[in-house]
Amino acid sequence: MNSRWIDIKAHDGGSFKGYLSLPHHTDKGVKGPGIVLIQEIFGVNAHIQGVADQYASDGYTVLAPDLFWRMQPMVDLGYGPDDMQKGMGYMQKMDFAAGVKDLAATVAALRGLPECSGKVASVGYCMGGMLSYLCAANAGVDAAVCYYAGGIHTKLEEAGKIKCPLLFHFAGNDSHIPESAVAAVKKTFAGREGVRIDVYPGANHGFNCWDRAAYNQQSAALAHGRSLSFLATTIS
Image (cartoon, rainbow, N blue to C red; front, side, top):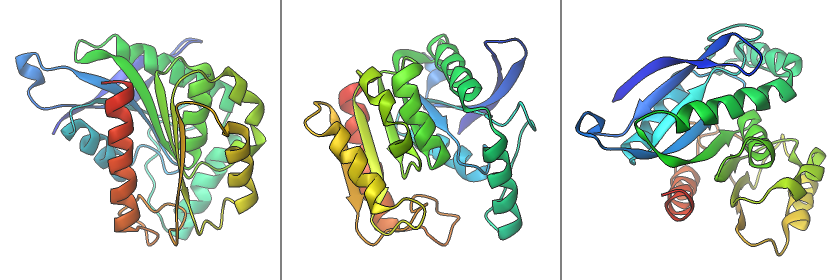
């Protein structure tokens, strides 16, 4: 893949890194719609870079920002118990308001790249799914995809700000997100045009990550296909 790390200017000074993955043939002037890819608690690790490359192979210009940079730049964790504990610690200490502003800066940086054709969506997983939802409300994206996003039911007051299309993917057997939380999201967005909520029966939290025991190939493939269809009709 044609990928590299770039610097992104923060809204309040300083800069942070983002993993940029480009579609094929950008050297020949090919451009792609933009995706801001939002990490889980494990940082912009090998899996998130792999997902960025996956979307780049689908023709998107993808930028995955390092959102823990204010605490520890370039966090790169695995999925064992110790790394899980470290990742949870970073999330608990994270300033989410600053994180959303960093994401808005990432959206602006992506739109400014010559390889980006204009429109930008956010796609996020777990913590990143919540942040993708907040991007829809506050960061000026043209569409948002949220995978098993915990905590959205505590931020439903943001729903009124959202004018762009939204796609939610929830696991049907999620030990981190209760059914009542999914029901609250469904109730809030009931009848809203451009909002789709899919639940994957039997799938566990983290079902899209091929490096985790929770990986569910069928659910991951189905969700990815739905995400591509959604993005093709909203930002392409």
